[in-house]
Length: 150
Image (cartoon, rainbow, N blue to C red; front, side, top):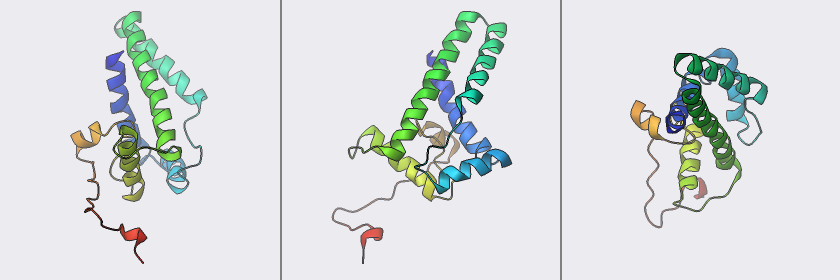
């Protein structure tokens, strides 16, 4: 299962970076999310469920049913967790310094940075590996953010 969870984070990054931001039909649909980040736009279950089943069948054929089940379970748990995290970064409050707050800041940078950085939603690991991580804006104590200056 751990292999599946780790694989999910890499798959999430790859799909987001190289499919949702580059492949025309997916890019257009994903652009709607960038235009309306709080709208409930996502991959329908009727599409994702058969993909997981197909992957399980390939893994079961190449390895074994127990191995396929463990990896597929990890992938599905990762996918479901991604759904919760992605919803939370757009719709939930977070305490400054918490894991969720950092995820919210990272995803907000993705939405603001021309969409070419910070592709990881549930983790920033692969953005670090592939050099697509943007750095948070450093604020000095007592500084007023530019958007609040008059």
